[in-house]
Image (cartoon, rainbow, N blue to C red; front, side):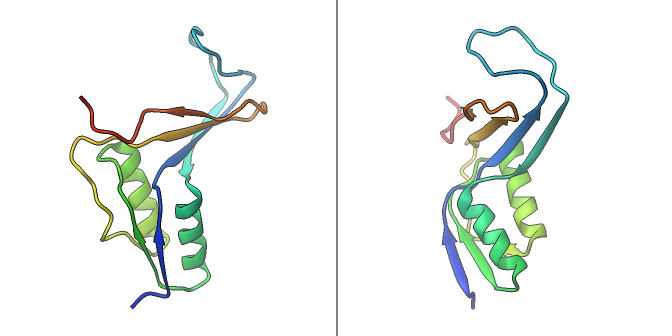
Length: 115
């Protein structure tokens, strides 16, 4: 029995820090630091509720890639039950990339099968 069932998306945030603004058609630029963190408001809510001591289960679809595995592992570390998350083979996760300089967040990849 669970206190809360959360249905939502499961995507990490990639936080980049440095004096660089994302641009289209740009050349490689160096950043100071990068951090991969738990993202998606529904996943963040689930982790927060579990931290408060509630029994939380999560349902959704998650990519079968490094980002999806990262998210499921981090949610499990935070006592969120992810046993009912669907992981279709070949799917990739969407990643939110935020720059510290106040630029707009950029999405990369897509939660659809690789074809």
